[in-house]
Length: 301
Image 1 (cartoon, one colour):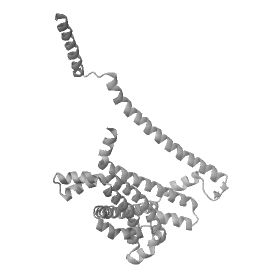
Image 2 (image 1 turned 30 degrees about the vertical axis):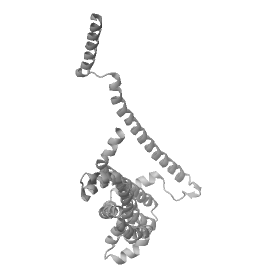
Image 3 (image 1 turned 90 degrees about the vertical axis):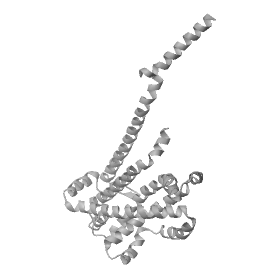
Image 4 (image 1 turned 60 degrees about the vertical axis):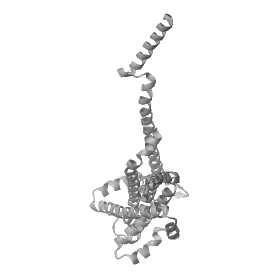
């Protein structure tokens, strides 16, 4: 019995010493390794993806250079396409002129106004249509009928409806972003789990509380996707309006360069449009990250 009690006493000492080990702040290698290796691996993956994207851009520029230099002609004709060096020299010359910045700022202002209006009205209409079947039945025929109409087809009617060319261009830009935002908002609201709504209602939540704390958080991923898509479509619509009825703007700059047979400026206008559209979409995604932080936490957990 004494031997048994001695063994039990030794086991207690060993377990007590093991339980005290964490108090010293020392961690085992198994505990330390995941915390160090996971962020490093993520950083390597991110840098690897950035390197691949930069390499893809460089390859495209090199192919463009050789196709323009050697006048490549097979299905696509590069005989009149300037080389990247010629375009770069023309671009640096434009950076010294004030009018070039005016074109960019005018287009950005139109995008800001039209996209903001489309975001506010699109989200509101999408929530109403997603939550109330009667409103969906009333408004959906209009949405589905007007949505396929291209931006160019709206220009004559917009000029007739609005007193100034500026307001008509903003209206066309608004339409380009409005429909993707509405449809994605409807999809997000309708995909909200009905079990969560019933659970909130059983706990005494009002309709307003259910909308604010259950429906909107569940629909946010789809809404944010609609905002990103709407930003790209709004740039396309804006350029269509500027080409036909504008006097300033990067779309007008591009079309006017084509009319004056200034080929380097055409490519500059196209690239500026692409860069501005990409940056605008990136800003929308960055602005949506704080609202979607709960999704990142779920993935990490």
